[in-house]
Image (tube, rainbow over all chains, first blue to last red; front, side, top):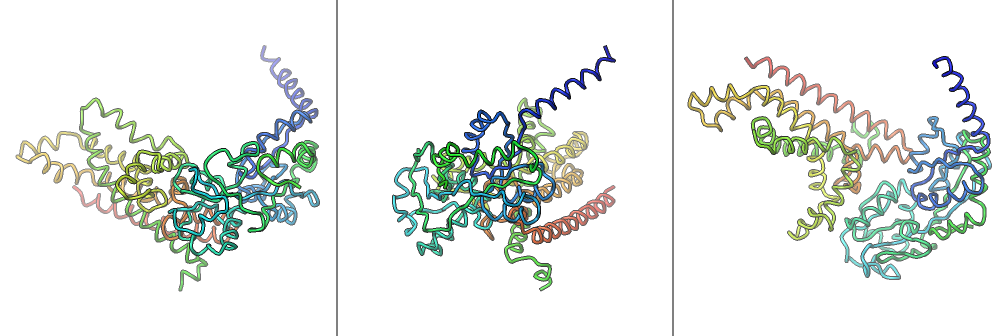
Length: 252
Length: 232
């Protein structure tokens, strides 16, 4: 029996290699705010191409550190355009593969009905104790929230009420658990199939802040993986873009 | 002057101050709370002993961020604690120093109770019984026999609680809201620097934290040894 073990193992290994060649895996690092749409996009992509998506969700800043230290990610879907550009410069990403896959929409949201009015007038008053935002230094949505408050001329009035989440997921959590009465979150977090399902919200007009441009890039580790390039092509396709728009983003 | 030369920002310095205050407050509150609890666990024959002992150890099981998330829910308007504090007119405890203190006490509870209980158990009942036959009341026996004998356990509990709170991260991250001067501690500040790709600031602050903590722990260890030598 024993002498057969190496043969069996070899056969198994060969099988795995053969399978790998037919349908490859692609390791994707995905910005936390894009979690929900990615979970819908991945099965679509797998159906179309036969490749398999292995997705990790987290903050773009953390991924940047990990990629620079040898993380095996092959594609990055970032929360900004700055990080993919920096990776292109330092050799972490393949030059010329960068493109905008989604443009984030900011929304002022409360889980209670009637707290946030249709024009965001609530921001001019003092009717609430705390307002949650994502850290403006770390998260593009946080920076956009601060720009919006400044554009409305109420930044100084509301700043003492800030509670800051390290990313947009945590800002949403503060509002969803009621610990903050309202907060700036991503439209994609509160919108299901094109509708805001709970509480009250004001979708911030895009001209009040700089666009939240989210870019994807092929990482150096994925240079020779056809599945990685296929995923990037898929994200540019019309069905994928329609899905991204329904999830609460603008997509060119 | 020397501190600014180290490259620390004013937010970094505020975070260091807050961390020290939180660690000190947690240590004091937790020792006061753990002394009777550990004594009871070491000496009681109640059937509740085993379940309470298990309960005290539970904070070790949950990952800190998960523990922090449930504290956030507990302190929120739907949670029993948040409902209570709102009814009392105190508002919500999340994003306040008191909230962080409660979180730290829960998070470090096993680190304070275990060494104390072990110390009380090691003493055993015999010295106390002797003291009582010599006419001491139970309280006198505890004060002048059990407590001095448990001093190494007390020092260990204090050191562990202090150090554990200095390094606390997940709980604060979840219930703190990162408000400078109020809930922004050193660990979340370092994390913020790393996330913001400002590695130089992260390195400086981490180095300060490590050097400072090492100095405190070393001092306490030396102090603990000297005290133990004085004991007969």
